[in-house]
Every structure is written in C-alpha cells, then in structure tokens.
Length: 114
Image (cartoon, rainbow, N blue to C red; front, side, top):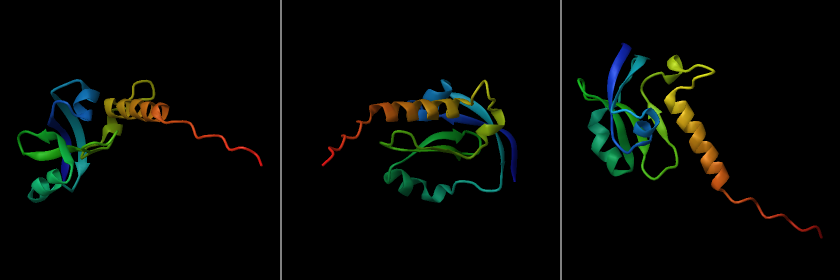
C-alpha cells in the first residue's frame, strides 16, 4: 500500500502543469494500485499523455487525454487538500474548463410553433 506524500514532476504544457503553475508538486496517496508501465507506450500511441510522474520510482501519477478539453486522472487524493474557500488547483482548473466549454457552445435554435 502506498501511503503518504510523494513527489510528482509535472510535464510542461499539460493541464496539470497549468493548474498547479509549478514544475513539481507533492500529493497524498492512499491506494494499492499503480499504473502498469508495461502498457505505457501503447497507451501513449493511442492518445494518453503522462502529465505527472514520480521521479524516484518512475510511477505515473497523472494522465490526460490528448485533444480533449479536460480529461485529467490522478493516482493521489486531491480532495485531501481542498477546502470550501480554497479549492485544490485541479478542481479549480476543472471548473474553469467546464465554464469555458459551456460558454463556447452555441445555443440551440428555437423551434417554431406550428
């Protein structure tokens, strides 16, 4: 079981790096599962982006999908560091992306009454 705080090096230009505004972060873990690096090349060829990795253990910590408005998945627990008056950087960035996506969509055409 992986418990406690672990370092994560962020990939520049990713959603995660923009959300944190940092090159490296530390986040809390509490889990028994890890990303299987044996599948890393095949998943990256299919559009997976590794946006955070533990530099000491070479463990994938954060993934994203290429060409997606906002798909970010993490191995850690961002909710442990989020507060009602100070959202975790990933939560705040997710909400901002959702607002941007919604405001960019066209309104449906109104239907005429027959």
